[in-house]
Image (cartoon, rainbow, N blue to C red; front, side, top):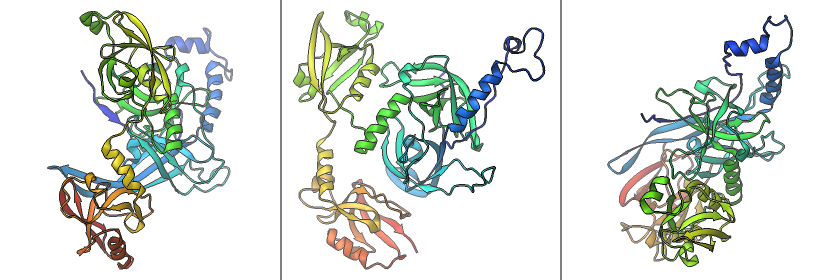
Length: 474
């Protein structure tokens, strides 16, 4: 029976999870004749090791404010505002942190709350929420990188998740079901769990109790390092059933480094359609081996075609490292820089070959046009966008524009303003408050004449349909 996947929304802190002891374990702890009152045992030692480790973990509560939408009949209608809660973890002293992409997706504002100290022994008051900037989001891995101002933040280092082994003890920190400051304990059930044969990466599977409220926070090893980022569970009830999954720490570290450097993840492409070789495929196609990556198609004018890769080739190594399946192949590509030449070991009709392939950055003519348009764009902070005039150069971005004038939204600005409804990249602005906005100058002029706090209603074309958006109401 296929179980549904439950995304966990998350906030994080600490408290020790339950540990069940069998009669055999109890006998080992107490001894055959019973433990003397006050005598130390192995669990005391373990407990004293865990407590300072958990104290050093600094989870971060993440709260994002956006909008909820109702999509029907091809139209998107704003139906209300939405608040999402999750957890993040600081990964650098200068304020970078990681959370799940689904926690901050479409957020207008993101607030961060560090672990509150209350008015306990040190007498410090609770921290006020901090505003965080969204540096970048990677939907494929469900990761997002945020940034808060300041320096000398307490953070957790990344573990080398390739060294993680089945049976290792790990801890999940979070606020399951709203129970703040909680931690649960378990073991690694599988260090590399692929959910399908051709999945591009593997998860850490753990029996550590993970519930709604744990997702986005760290899965911590006994060294106090980030072994992974909790992301989802398999559950028929919506609660933990011992099937939790985390994104491996090494992958998280790579995504973080790329987003911090480029604002996004730059994935190189070869221009092939590939799949893992399995015993079934090998028998049916009379292949010389039952592992590797089978090239099913080679796209014209792409890197693989230029390098001489052909349909039905089997890739067996990258840079001398053996390749067993598509996940390993994808992982090697992900860890390589755009433009870098990779040496592929290939089997072609029983013959061993070596090919040099240069990774290319994926792109399309439309993306190139949008990037060119962005370079000509003008910031319009009043409505929170970058926009470019609709002209002969930018017109190919729009399918059948309703008018031969206007301004095309090319990007959204990170502003502190909160709009009732939002402009999106690709929208064409034709008017403001019933007056025609023929271009960028006319648009900014109309906006400058609207007093602060007054209504702003924009006429736009979106997906071929004219509509009014209320940005600011009375």
